[in-house]
Image 1 (cartoon, rainbow, N blue to C red):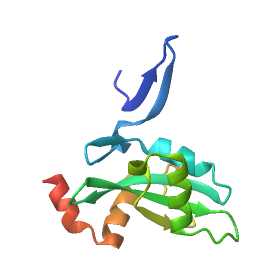
Image 2 (tube, one colour):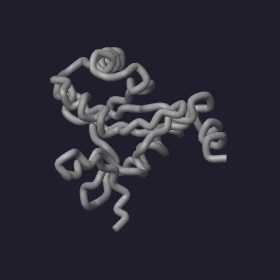
Image 3 (cartoon, helix red, strand yellow):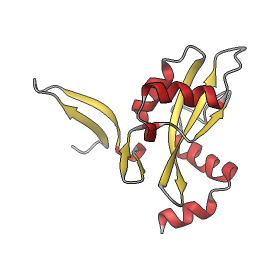
Image 4 (cartoon, rainbow, N blue to C red):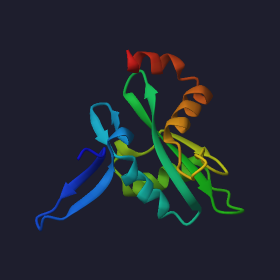
Amino acid sequence: MHTGDLGVLDDDGYLNIVGRMKDLVIRGGENLYPREIEEVLFQHPAIASAQVVGVPDVRMGEELMAWVVRRADDDLTEDDVRDFCRQRLAHFKVPRYVKFVEEFPMTVTGKIQKFRMREMAIEELGLQAAAAVVTA
């Protein structure tokens, strides 16, 4: 049965789900799993929630963008988020873009719409030309 989930089978035969195939970001030939980066972001005490999506980039194919919900009354900056990631992740897994939001776009049933986040990011960052090159 094909579910679109990505998993790793350990030596004991247990399957660990590590992400979704459609969420996979390919940056400069490297396969990046947003779930891994999100789990690092969740460790930051000033971050209430985070989602990572891929956005088009002419040179690298795709770049990472973190959407972050800050905890109340926190003055966390984009550089703070990147520095936190640099200490815990390989350099190529650090999000190039960071966007602070109050909430994520969701369906009526409460599922986060990553495709909508990507569309909004492309429009806000002016990446329409890069998106055309990546999809062509």
